Length: 183
Image (cartoon, rainbow, N blue to C red; front, side):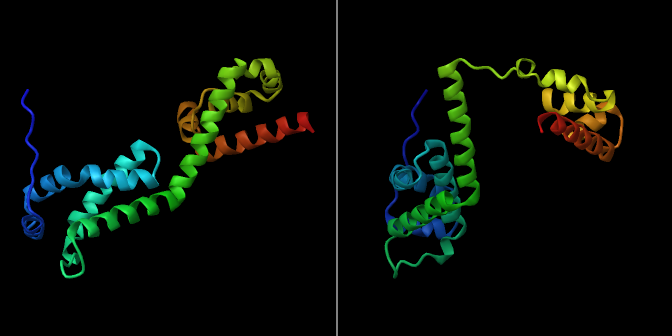
């Protein structure tokens, strides 16, 4: 297998190729600046996979908004670094990123605790299965599908051949009945 030779253009050639939206421009951009831009992004976004996503989004933004670049205002590299930096900051400030990190931390912590304590989620050992057995059969079936087998409400409705509203009502009634056992 032969190694692909990296493309290298002068800044003027690159600016011209980007302005003309030539294929070689995006290849040269990647070959010439990906490691530098990844370095900038990685200082802000610690997670490697997320940083790689931001790098890709950065190249797309550079490509799509190149008409806003002006050589009189500064060098191409400086303009691209600012885009990369702003994209990385936007990513870590985004609601999705914050929620993803919160969920990730909780998931990792639960796994870590489970590994340390050798715990396994077994509802039958908690007595929940016995409480569910006390429910009406139509409630028990839905609760079993949704909570113990991981079905969505829609999937449970399809599986049981009943309207979604009926599934939700019976599920709510089952939960209300179970709450009585805990209060």
